[in-house]
Structures are given as structure tokens and as C-alpha cells.
Image (cartoon, rainbow, N blue to C red; front, top):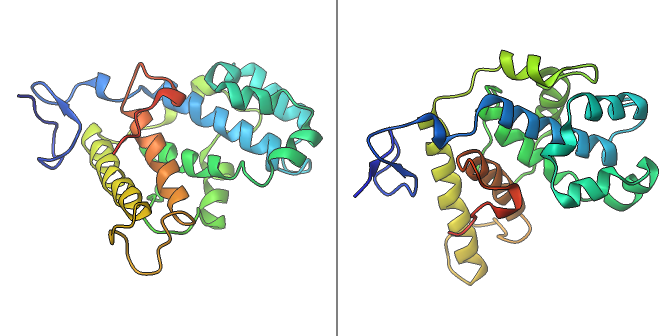
Length: 216
């Protein structure tokens, strides 16, 4: 039988043989490029021109080859004229902030993603977008070289907590009494789902974003 990885709980679904290894987590360039791609997708569909000018955003995407870190649906969004993208996706692209938050935390962002029902707070989103992530003239190689990824054991334990919360949500959706009073598993569960998606993806090198195993 494999042994539990690092300090993860004995029932943690993440195991490795003989302790942690680097392949249990994507490397800094991979995590940073994906996070920058999410930043670009969100900004294309939701950020006003005076905050993220189209010409600067286009240069940011091309200079850092961010299309290579986008899913097919994200490429479809980014290929739309910006005004059309904002008309179609401004109301739904905010979930990308939840994905970004979990990845930013792995890369050293101080604010810890929680298991609560609320979506990311404005002050957290602003700190992540404008203080932690690169500016529009930023370079992916410089950014990834400057981050300090959290220990694998911390990432595994955080993913495990979100795995358990995600399981509780799904049980509640089937009628189980597995979430706190006032927590709607449909309305409030999205933030937990999206944060868990990023954490699980980061711990599954070799799997595409859309192929991430989100079973509970």
C-alpha cells in the first residue's frame, strides 16, 4: 500500500510512494502561466478599458504565450471582440477569480482561500489582480522566477479540505444534512467547487484543466 504523503491526513486521497516528490505538484512556470491566462480571460470579459486597455492586454497575452494555457472555451472567449466578450460573459467570468485565488495561494499569495459560502471579496481580488499578479507589461518568466511555491504538504492538505467540502456539498445536493445551516449547496457551492478545481489541477501534472478529476 502507498503511504500518506507528508502531513496529509491518513484518509487523504493523495498518496505517493516513499514521501513527497516534485511531480506531485506542477512547477512554478506551469502554475504561474495558467494563473496569468485566467487573469487575461477574466480581464478581457470583465475589466473596463481604463483599467486594462485592450492593446496592453493583447500584448500581455501574446508576449507570454498565454493562449497555450487556455482551454477551448477560454480561447473562444478571448477570440471574441472585447465588447462582445463582455456582453456575453461579464456575468459569469467572475468564477475565474475563484480559480485564480487558489493558484495564487499555492504560489505564495498571503490570503488563504476559505470554505465559506461567499465569493472572493473585493479587497482580496484587488490585491491578487493588481499587487500579486504581474502588470500588463509583465513577463511570465520573471514572475515565475520570483514566486515561492508553498510546500507540497500544505498544498495537499488544502486540497484535501476542499475535497471533503466538495463531497459534503454533493451529498447535500442529494438531500443529506452535510452542510451548515444557511449554506445552500447549489447557490453557495460554486466557490468551493472552483477553488477545489484549481487545487486538484495543481496536484495532477499531466492532466488538462478540463480533464481534472473532481470526483468525490
